[in-house]
Image (cartoon, rainbow, N blue to C red; front, side, top):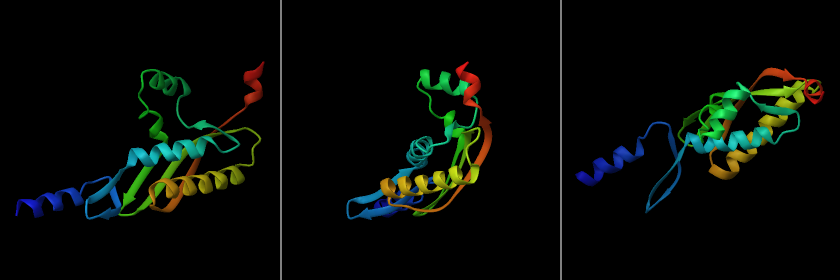
Length: 138
């Protein structure tokens, strides 16, 4: 009886998914893992300056080793072996917003599905700001 209650508890952990499992037990992927993949994929797309939010606050958070502040720009909703993602970004002024947003969606789907084996059902991209990088070069 103790064994069955332990298995039930492990299988019902909120905010986690178990797309794979075997005789050794379930494999849970935490939403922080998915957020890290989203961050990496999004920031690698041409035209993306950074995830949305305060650059100063995010830089301070990174210095002290806290990445969760940057993750406010990323929302992950796990439903079994499927995941829906929202990501907020700042883009370069002059970039074609629909093209960059579509590239973000493709990059995120590819990266998350590759490293987790989960199915990405949606990637919603919110463009919060356009940064004019030429102003910062002066």
